[in-house]
Image 1 (tube, rainbow, N blue to C red):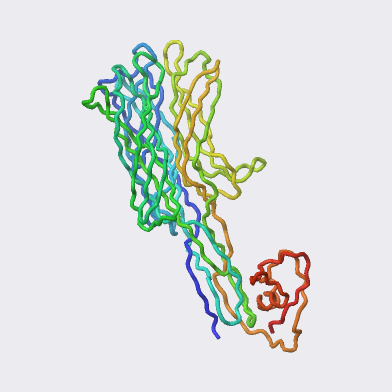
Image 2: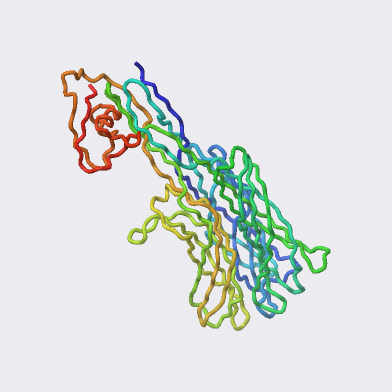
Length: 515
């Protein structure tokens, strides 16, 4: 009689492949004639805007530009800031190591490596620097596992493997338009930024519907004030994205990012058009449950089995919420006046806590508060205050088996001075989910050898003193007996079901001989 073997292939978690790319910048920025000449450069910021981000096969392609923003002061009296920017395009293609990878966008984060900015004339700025762009790609591993065995006196113990598999991921660049109050005469617009606040996300067959709010902030200096003030505008958005293969009962994670915004004068009295370019990120995960063979033996033949480890991602925690950060520090000059603050925020990534602390995994991100201060002479200086931010929670495990599918953006910034100390308060909105890979053992191969010797001359019953928690299957395997015969001989059935583990303390079991 031939052993019948049934197999199936599972797309398991294979880890995360990470890389670091250096994006160099070397450019000149010309000051338009309608702006005053440069007297002092106060701050230069380099931020990436990724337009294309896609993993296909074993290749990751990214394309976009570095937005180089320069804040400077002219020779005009007063603490007036002026802003100019330039886009520096980049395009990167990375060949991934041999393997299988999840199609779709890679996870991206990074930070400036260095930035040297100087005025070489009153209307020309030389900028040299570099930005480190980090990317993480989800890899998959094909695991061929046994799902069932039959004949040849085979006994098997099965287990259910559950987890999540990413079946769709999409980044879609969108535009939106609204109106805002037209800047007053003499008003200097210093920054236009915003965040996407997720309202709801629902799945239908083959598509996802997302509702949310674009919360825009225009940072400016009024003509009659040297303080940096913020004007806000909210815009409701709704978007439907085609995602072939998704179903209503799948899990969808969504977050957004404002990439660029411009104000344009319109014919309406006192109104300006606000044109917004933003990106919507969607990930759909499908719940999987597979029954596989965890262990097996034959009651008539010697049995050789091969086990393998199969990792599947499972949800650990929701990352939707708010993170409040408060910064305090001594000002370099106690007599300066705080005029305002801009914040650059990095992504939170899984980080292994040091031993001796809380242990486990935390999500930690970097950020910098750029605080603009003025001294008694009216000269402006930017004081950078780096900080760490982290969503609440600590989880067991390793960073290699942890994936943070999330987005984050700053929705509120308040800066000021208390005595001689600087204080900055900011609120970060987060969305997404933390996933962690759990490992399970299962059989991938089984082979039958020679039959056992004729056992007719042996005992018909064995006595075995079992301990609490021992598995009935393992006891039967030790004696090459059928597990159902062991259960029947000891009347262990309860409500017609056979127990998997022994629930009592030391007990004497009758083991029917299989030979």
